[in-house]
Length: 134
Length: 64
Image 1 (cartoon, rainbow over the protein chains, first blue to last red):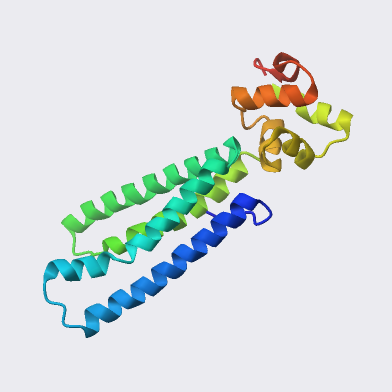
Image 2 (tube, rainbow over the protein chains, first blue to last red):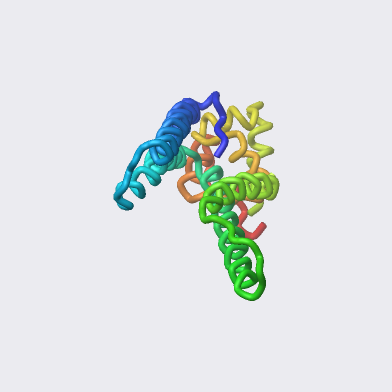
């Protein structure tokens, strides 16, 4: 999800992504602080506060989709293939790990790692997909 | 799909970036089409033909 900063669409995407990431960090810190220091009792309210950092992150997804629609067909194809590879690899690795976990005493891995794995996987796959078209 | 874009571009003294600008796509897209590793959509093929002032079949060889 890197962007060429000479392109005005890319520059706009970088600004919106930076805003989303800043919002994510601020809401995350506020959420963790509130859950640790305030006596928030109802589980539903705790869940809403815990989930709150996802909202600014979703704004980042919106910014990326807006940027994606401005790309030419070559870049859209690279991004689409890289995303498909990442989703496939992360999905099948999760499935395989789940099977192995059922049969052994492998440690639990939190679902919180799915999103970073998808993003990193997409970035790595993008490098290989781009090389394929050069 | 084989094409004559590199030759046509060289005849006009255009860089990949310049052709990309005229066709409304990136330099990387032109490079990928030139090498034959990325087949352009019909609208992009028409645009490239228009930029060169030729017909699509004068640029692209579907048998290649």
